Length: 385
Image (cartoon, rainbow, N blue to C red):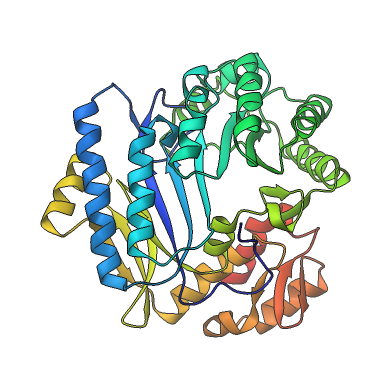
């Protein structure tokens, strides 16, 4: 398995992101491009064909570049038929030179999905990311999840027997959550043997059911002090277990356990976005280009058929490209090279934030400090406005 180093990605390599929009249930905090899975297998079969056609077209556009990784996200890609997952992987390998690469798939821990983990492994998946979110039944009900804590534990046991590489997503800063309760949840996850833990602070995204509940007053998130205490507990518990917080919301047991795909994206590498609403970043004619596929499934299928799968295609000028590099790079512990930020002329602002203890500069790279990472949004605002 390829392990990520500290260096920038191979400038010639490209990662592949595949978006599967179907979910068994739409969670009230989710603002991703998702639709309810109503068992319309004919529609899904058509979408698979469109995904394969889109992949071929984008491969022809950028040429046979080395493949860095594949990531199946969503939505709930574990709802895909394993044979369709295998077809996408095989087609990607046919189109791009690829060795022993990381191939991740996101899954929910329902008994139904756990039943075919072995088939997904046989299809080519070698890293599973489990969206457990909580190991407490009351919290799972609040989050609108369609699995119980016991189902999650069973799925984890099955996954551990199938995949060598496992990651778990957990959500914290829930209403009424205590540091003691959150510490116990993380400790249990650590005891299960995960190599990678992604603890996400609950955010109330625009347009979600949770936003509407907060406006009604029926949802009251923790105050800033409580959220800060929960964040500090996260760093303390996971750091004490030897996990490296290599990105704001991602902790790995060691360097080899870091997500190759996510690092490729955070380091500014090119990636192909396939599927409804998928985002991509490609170097076209020597210029960084942002792409967004049509969000609606029917529009995406029609767009692929007509050779226009993207609803948006934006050429990023040097300043926009540098801003994006800053926004992504400062999330990581390694930070970002100052040379990548030349178009922004940030020298004075960086120096001020270094003096205040929020940033550090070393070996030509700027990174957020332990003080700066919890308030990263404010640091970025100070740099860019």
